[in-house]
Amino acid sequence: MTRDAAFKRRVRARMARTGESYSSARAHLDSAGAARPGADRTGQVLHLTNGDVTVGLLREAGLAEPILPWRDVLHDGPVPGGLTDAELRSVRAEFIAGSGWGSLTAVRDSFDARDEMLAAHSDARLVLWFEADLYDQLQIIQVLDQLRRRGAEPARISLVSAGEFPGIAHFGGLGQLRPDDLLRLRTDEVVLTTDALDLAARAWAAFTAADPSGLAGVAGSSSPVLRYVAEAFGRLMQEYPARSDGLSLTQRRILLSVEDGANTPSEAFAEVGRRERRPYLGDTSCFAIIEGLASARRPLLTWLDDAPLPSRGLRLTAAGREVLAGHSDHVAEGGIDRWIGGVHLTGSRPPWRYDERRERLVAA
Image (tube, rainbow, N blue to C red; front, side, top):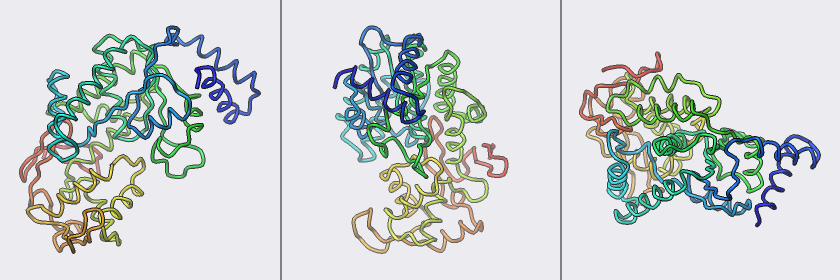
């Protein structure tokens, strides 16, 4: 599909949203494109998004320019600061391969090609298509941090970001949308500012720091461009072990789902997604957390059979019931070994906990 045809689809999408005539909608988009400092006049455009499903939808929507999927589950495993981009790629590749999610060579090659493509387009027009959830917001700040360090002009970067969509009661992501729906989102595309790039860099530094005390500042920030970063960092802090029971919010939701009748990891994953305001957790990550709860020093879950993992029978142990009732502390009794960004939590007395009443991290 030609670029002109794609533009006409954007005009029709705006007409459906605003009720304007074709000529009015076209005039608005023409004016916005001409006025935008970063509007592309060279034909060099790169679109970035969160995964391959959205890539396919964008192609169906008529985008002919290059599309780069940003494949990394940054809320899982180590993301330490103070490293070069190449060193961080190596750390992430080793974690992903060690988790059984891909071969080391393939993951390294994918990360190398990804960063090389972004570097090659740092002077191009860049359009970021991402969601409001934690998974996507971490990817956004990584991308923007790299672009900022490479001297990319904010006015040449724009963001198409969605936290909800008309007609979808519990919006789970761009993959739920039809190609035409994606183009409707583009009518709300916003251009990056220097302040937004600075916030992304601060957020990335806070996320990758060995001391998580900077997370609260990001969670309390406000940006008309990066509208969902603060909320995502508030959710990130809830993955630290709670003062009340030593559970992360995800762990607690998994246990509660089993207590309420989820009999398999697949059922627990579906219920956890329903309980999240902005679902961000993939099934592979969820299953890994379930396995951790079942293999802990003091297991909170037990397996009922040897079926394949997604359909394997599950139930709470007595220890799981005690923790949910607030009578024992999962980390104090079973220990922890988990990375959250640049923080490595280990042992039975990790230095940081999440205080649910104060909604902040506190020194343990």
